[in-house]
Image 1 (cartoon, helix red, strand yellow):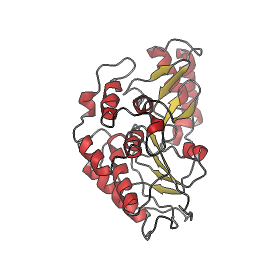
Image 2: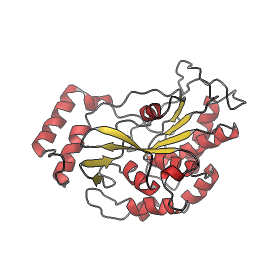
Image 3: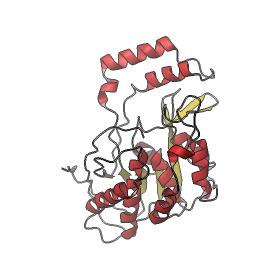
Image 4: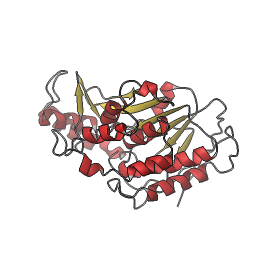
Length: 299
């Protein structure tokens, strides 16, 4: 079953931003979307990504084709390559991200052929940030720091984590970066609204106060980390709309099953084909089209 939002005509005459959401192994659907766009000669003026979307986005921004990324993905087993155990996380994903970026020569973001930004979230201030400079590996480490699963990144007063819980697709950041139309790809459902409902939010915030979120600059230990997560999980999801939102039907596709690249890739391609139907030139009109995402999964 699918649904469609009311048409919102746009033109791509001056380019567009491609915003790729988080979703673990479901993010391989981004590769299918990239293939569909390439077939129509549609090249983004900039690429933004959250979590897995930042990994795929960085590869595309570095000039890799979707096919080449598929080949590289077949050589990686994230759960074996991530170092275990990690402080404040089940896995330390730094070795994994550094190995991934090594495949494109450890570039800096500002040197990539296509402008790129990786979204991350500061648990202390409750704000997102788009990383648009510096080593790609460091940007991916911060963007992919899935709370509890991977270790957060403490840097000065900030504590950086995966931003997907607060905005699954970095659409608002794309709007801040450019006035160009935004094509978004969503592969997980947003956080349920009941996290921000009065009874749940009150309980979580009370627990955070009891644990103590600490002052800026305080050492990050397990108690403070748990308190920050409890306090921030109640923050509402950012409500920003893409000009074209593509939501592949990923029913039955697990966010942890990285061995299956082809299924999400194929469904991403099919969803993009439907959304882009009738486009024969790089500058046609688009209508927003979407299909439902079935469950919430870590970004």
